Amino acid sequence: MWEISSGQPPFINYEHDYDLAMNIINGMRPKIVPGTPLEYKNLMVQCWDADPLKRPDIKFLLNKIEEIHQSYQNINMTEGISV
Image (tube, rainbow, N blue to C red; front, side, top):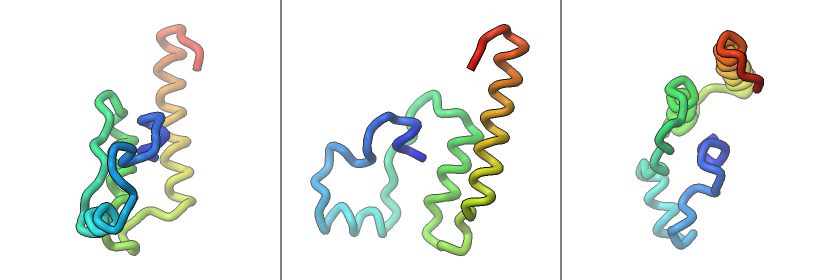
């Protein structure tokens, strides 16, 4: 999800090595791109939970992303902008 919002792979400026892997295990996450919609940001943070049981499943993700997309379509339709 971060790669979609940023347009680049996460940790692009880091060596992809043992130290990076350990930092990620210990909770390091990429900085969220300014301007990322709050709903999308919250969903992304849920996906980063250290406990796999607390992460959303694919069905939940699909539903939430569709909701986010639909809400932006509705906003743009009322403003006369096509998505």
